[in-house]
Image (cartoon, rainbow over all chains, first blue to last red; front, side, top):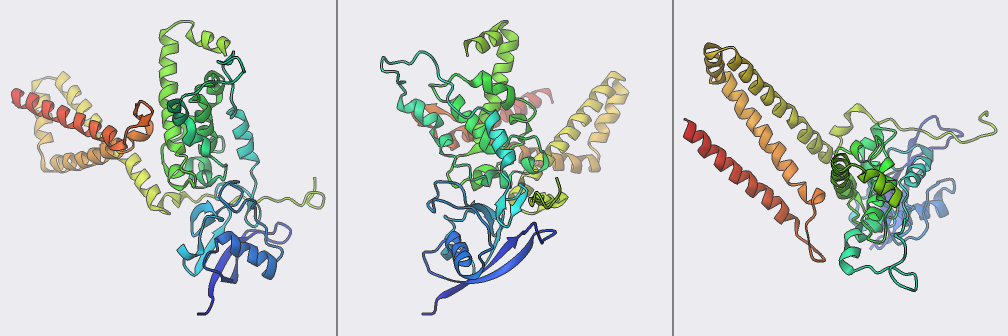
Length: 253
Length: 135
């Protein structure tokens, strides 16, 4: 049987020569177990050394190879050619400036990720003499799905709010804030609230829900953001109704 | 800094105003959002009714006659459909916003959605009989 040939229409952008991105077509002889990333590697090694794209692990863990394949953002290392037609359109992630070819500029996301404090702000003192914290299975289950994010940014690529609103922190950053807020070892919710519940945070989300549909790790950022909205609203009313509560929370943290 | 010293020239792909027509999920979202306009319109119609009531019995009777006109009935049926779409689309999203934990297990989404539909049904029946009692 002859080897299957697929045509990859890759959006190219070479800032030194292109005024705007243009599609370039490559015909790739592929093996049946290949993913789109293998086809890109074939192009890079055999057809066109100038093609630029990010990748690292080739096993859906590092999150580097997120790109838009046939109009759907996904990990190119998880996009099997056997599930795709013979003509495959490959573009960089939407809603980010294109640095070169399939490489996008991540600075905006990195800045926004930082401000939501995506790390444990632990309760003190530790619950056990050896400095570790006890956490039950039930407590772990509440935040674990949100800890699966690999920052591939597929969710940002489909989020119209992120595309239309420069300030919006976006799905992955807010899902990570929720991940730490719901961790029983953490007490940083108030510290994160200044950003999370601000005009760049959860209230800019209009619950399109596309972020959760495309997430390759089933993180469900839309759920995280809606749950944060409810928690933040409850906080707002408690702070209004119980004098001194907010300042008490802030100093405790 | 000129281009020779900095070869970077990131290209921003514009988001066209027709972005929401590009994919079914965006059309669904915009439909859900648009239905609220019709619910707002019905709220305005009810406010007009209160205003006409404040003007006396004749004014309110004229308002009621206008409500029973064919055009108003068609509009009401249309708004009712919009309200149903609006309510259903939000009810179906409730498991995301309000996950229910029983011990260390998350309850299936249909329980939360079903509870909303159940509540909706009970309130509708109560309103139906309440209105029936008034008539």
